[in-house]
Image (cartoon, rainbow over all chains, first blue to last red; front, side):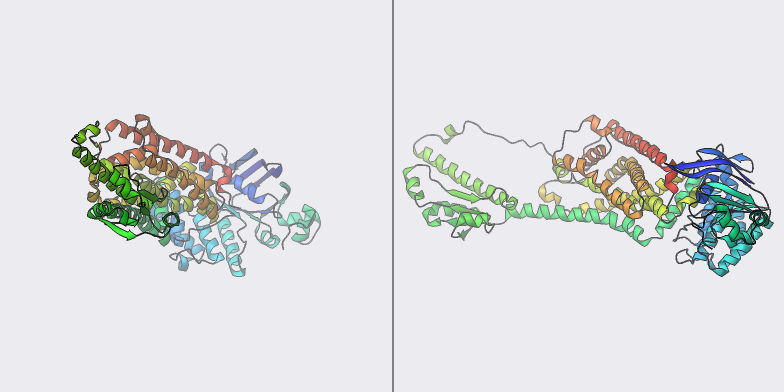
Length: 244
Length: 392
């Protein structure tokens, strides 16, 4: 469960995040939708305590991120916008590094890596050096490494970005799998179809503010449009930055 | 369970050991190149000095026929008489000749009359190569002049001692070791340089490199305080630098034995005591430099920018080292409190076989360690900044 209340963040004169509030519940997939530069990544960075908000509160499972950032990070699995791997290490070593930083014992590490490799269908690349991985293989490894500590809450910043059709399909399946396990899944995207196909709840962000927060069906009803893309354009009031 | 800093340390060590270029630089090129280069330079210098003193001295003499006795005397002292160029001044200016001795036509007349007979020595003071030859020829001429003067006095029944009211007895207090100390004043700089070279690759890779590869942000999303991550990275950087330094000291201790220093009447003390004391004096400096390198790399936006900063940083220890080796000061206690300077002085003294007493040595280690701590705290501050992790 992730709760965000009245989050603010400015870089100089630019107010990147200007009063964002929403909640992402357990057993649901919440989509953070918005055009490029709307403040999605900055919002997520404040959630996983990489940045400090100028004002506002972030609660993860009821823990205040400002009070105990380490406890919050322990409860989060994060796939950031930057998702570089260590190319001279194998996929397994990349994942194992983060598992050790989470202070998991040897038996747990092995078990979790095998389980994630199965779920992400990456057993064949597990012991290959990350040098020369395809985009899809890189994202799989980055996700496995983010989830190695079995977190209740999962934050994915643009997980579909740069993936081909097959990789996108398996990513969707994997996210539904996370939801079925009862986790709280929060992901950002600027691509309509993804959000519409996956989300139980959509939070639309434009110019640093939440402009809509509802289920896909409710959003369509609210704007009186049959398809989500039209609803989106209507909500943010322009077609700027919109990529279908 | 392994502490997080140790997890980071081992990962950095393992990852960088797989990079052939880093391994080659840190473990082979860095430690071996500098001592070898140093040995070559010193060896060439020594050989040149020795050559000058023992070899026949070729001297072009203009008007040799004007003073046959003088020329015969010079020949006895291993001077090789050459034909003089047509224009001695021009030849020396152009660098065609190191020096030319010119004996004027009226030399013989003045000599017979017992008047001061003039010879001209044409040379160029700014030609370093010629200096030893000029000094040698001047000495020979001086000797000849004095001996002839003494004979003339004796012929008149006067003791030559009358014109020697003062006798200088040289009592050189330098020992074989102290003379080699002057020669080896640059050595500490080579060790400091090897620390730089050994740590540079990791300092860049673990900070600017990690950011450029976009792996710093996911790393910092782990439930580990940034200070612990920094500590692990500094540890790995220091470990590589220490390895380079240790190998460098060992390589130098071995290579030093191939130097013909005994020909200069000096000797080096390259034993285990020297190696261990040098290593101990340099260890806190390793951590200080690793922190400074990481600090510089943390400010850089890219790998390339970090390399530029680090090359500039490498110039910092050059200045005090150059000054100290050109103008060796009298070692005073406060100097042992200044990082870089204290290592320079301590290592030079160790090389000369002088004892560095416990107090200055402890001061050297403690003050550098304190500076290292300050550098670490400063770097940790930069590491805590929000902007550090943001790649784009």
